[in-house]
Length: 267
Image (tube, rainbow, N blue to C red; front, side, top):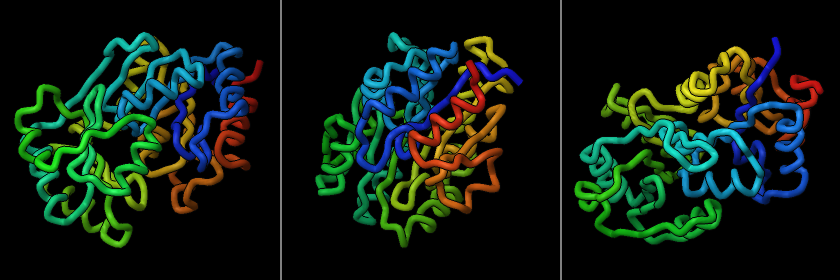
């Protein structure tokens, strides 16, 4: 199989724990693009943050943001956008208020939270975009001028599985609920996810999905890795995820990405 497209997760795949875009990270992207490969950024981050990093990395292909709810081209033009119902968003945030948990609502150009908290400040630094705090966010969401693409719930690791199961039961087919990290549960529009977004991008570009390679590190990437022609986890991914993909790299983070480019995208 001649692979033509490379979809890359951002955090803990292209970026290491320091979240810095170093020369080696830029080199990984450029190495693939120099070989004629379409490189696609696929991240759980909202588009406003994803766009900044796509620019810093020099990525020329489409950007998949909000775990697949938003797909835009390199010029920022909408290719696909999905939204959560307003009443659903309000109910989720209200539940977070009662639990004392932080909720983040992603719109195309902004991030909102229900509470001011050190965790919210840290998250803003990771995203490299400001987070607007609204103490009455649950009510405000019902009349927002912008629609919400995705919700992210910052939870205690001990309660993450219970909260994920609760919202899966309550929302059923109305949304996709996934615990992407030990402290993060994402709620996405029905039919959403990085896998469906990758399928859309391949169709949009006229590239068979069988000719795509996807690289990631977490549960939030698995649907994309399984949808791609070849799904690869970097070595720092949790071992329990290894059986769900085709390959696991020898090296972690960006060095694992470079392994993939050199092995599956020859000059």
